[in-house]
Image 1 (spheres, helix red, strand yellow):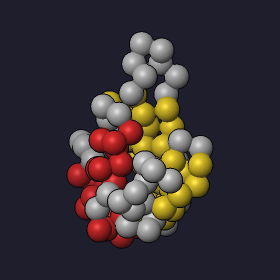
Image 2: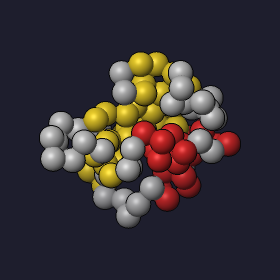
Image 3: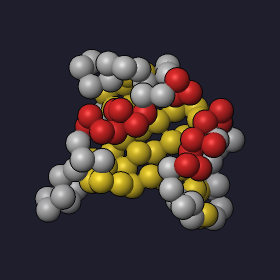
Image 4: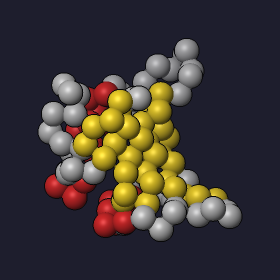
Length: 95
């Protein structure tokens, strides 16, 4: 879902985020509090134009999400990785 400050806009999948990678300012990961599904995580992308993208998905663990983010287009982007500040890179899990 994309929030532009006034309205929600549904997006089909994470392809929207990849197509708009130049506008990503930072990321945040939030573990949803669902005791029946501990791997449900929301990836939040904060865009340069004050648009916020919420991508809720079952990532099958931290490694799957880190691998998805580990792309040249997102390298070095600031991320709040489950509460701690980091940057997107190939060692996101081990920091």
